Image 1 (cartoon, rainbow, N blue to C red):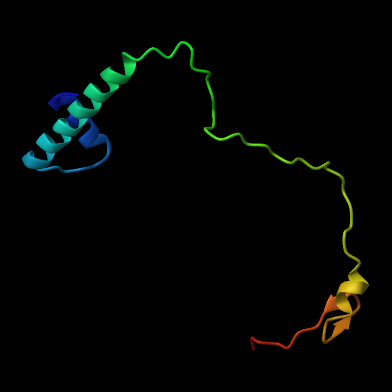
Image 2 (cartoon, one colour):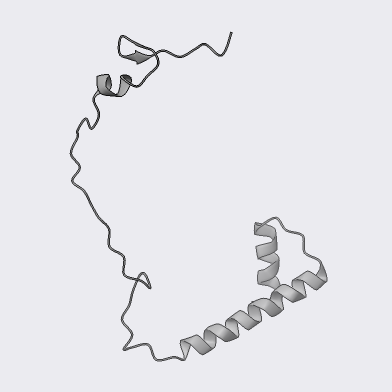
Amino acid sequence: MDYKELRLLEMLNQLSLSDAQKSEMLEFFEKRESDLAILNELDTESVERMVHVMPISTVVREDIASQPFDRDELQRGAPNAELGYWCVPRVVD
């Protein structure tokens, strides 16, 4: 990355960096580019591609519409229920 590209990133992200911050950012990106160059030199032909490091298994259930609870059974524990609705004290005037 050079100064021109950094300036473009600065404008796109609406930043105002000082000269010291700009030089620090350029140094940071230079180090990352050298790290990337080292990684690109590695032979990864025999490495199997993967999405996750750990194996992930998803338990999928059938998508079947059902009514797991009975309304009357749930309202038995309510302090007050009327016509299928829970009755609660009024809290707003």
